[in-house]
Length: 335
Ligand code: SF4
Picture: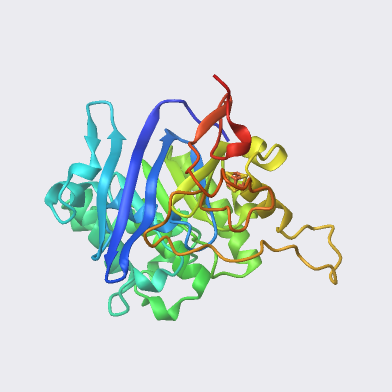
């Protein structure tokens, strides 16, 4: 795996809030990260950490009562830098970027595939929208994409409806559809969670293979550290709407700084673990970020919390070592 250092997507101080009756739910509260060209960045966290809302914000598909209230989402190209945060979420400009420049695959393909259209029709539609007006050429590209994602007998399968395929095959179709217009960034939101382990590994391999073929960057959203280790160059750990640690996969796995990251690593199943051995789990749940107080969001679950400090202020995200960032009062640089 290799990546270049030129930025493709730069997210700066992104805030996406949900305005509900009970108050303001700060699902994403000041998130910043960069995805470089050809790079795979993992966004990891438990459910409720804000990782999927971050992805939805980049795609500009956050639905009401959610609103992107602040921040920049800069998409770089040779010619220009577009701030996606400034675009009308239902306007033509973002629609021409979605599917063409940035594509997304989801955990459950049935939520994005139409049950009443053949898979061929659905892939073709996206090609006709973004790539060519020529129906014959669109048909050829569709067959080629089905072949590339490993669907046997594409000429026959092109006429299948989603319900006639297995979960793994449907995910392959989703990937074919997402990549049919050669996006520069693929956002993969838990694409393998619903699949069994063998199919999971096949899909991860497939994404890696296609990433190299299409020279694209991938933003991988997952709660699974195994997936991160398998696929990513760098990883951002999210907790309660904020990034709490960011670094290379090596930094995060071998030298985790944040207590939350350390606990996540401890709680993951190991190959060497005996079947009867219990997994350590992190006590408590991610709180709901409804009008969150000014404190470290993890202090209620943190074994290292400092009384009078962690419950009084929000720590800043600082670069502790080159390229290794952490948000925790245990790492405050003096001066
Ligand atoms: Fe724990 Fe305090 Fe660090 Fe938060 S800031 S993770 S509570 S030590």
